[in-house]
Image 1 (cartoon, helix red, strand yellow):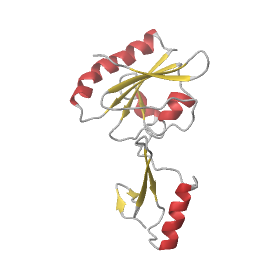
Image 2 (cartoon, rainbow, N blue to C red):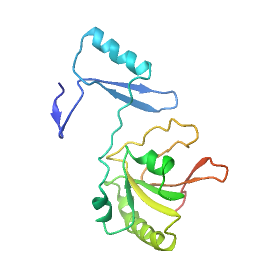
Image 3 (cartoon, rainbow, N blue to C red):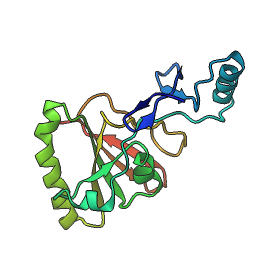
Image 4 (cartoon, rainbow, N blue to C red):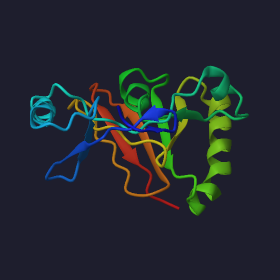
Length: 178
């Protein structure tokens, strides 16, 4: 078995698949079998689509953790991002701040983002969900469904508004301002 670290097992080896567009997918093994037959089966499972990529994701916060933060900004993680933004959003509009805890500008934006979450929770309670995504603890999952736009984060902080258009297609609008 893999070496214990952080409460979980690390794979003995990984495969990394890169597309021409720069998308990176990582695959892990369940065991450390390093014989030619086992490695071949591992690679075939990736190429056939039977093995899913591994996504770095913090654990989803509990309801108490969400509510105990003192402001109305929802925490999104790698494993819940697509579901909460595209598949089953709680509100018609989802504004997401992608940040890193070490980012100085992200720290400057945080009080205003929290105030926005509190303001919209009162003034537009049924319309806008204000959320944040720690890009250091989580990876943005690739979007496989063509009905949904790709989530592209090129730096921190990155703010995007996600919503469904009148024709039913999804849209992502990045904030491009001061």
